[in-house]
Image 1: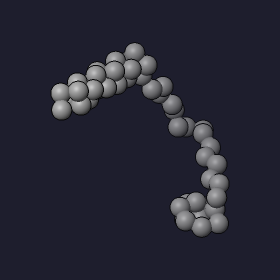
Image 2 (image 1 turned 90 degrees about the vertical axis):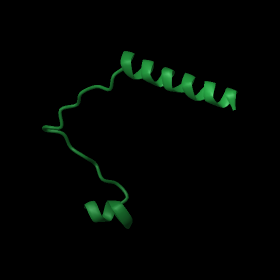
Image 3 (image 1 turned 120 degrees about the vertical axis):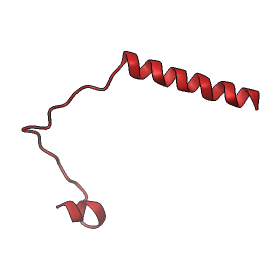
Amino acid sequence: MCCTLTLAVLLYVAYYLYKHFFPPPDINPKDKYVLISGCDTGFGHALA
């Protein structure tokens, strides 16, 4: 139990540090295109 809790805390700290030092880039969606593949059935078909 103690090892599991320690591992969970370490993973949380590592995730927090990663997000702090490597933030996701801000992408401006203006003038961007989306390629929808797999339009035969399902979600791709509904979007197309």
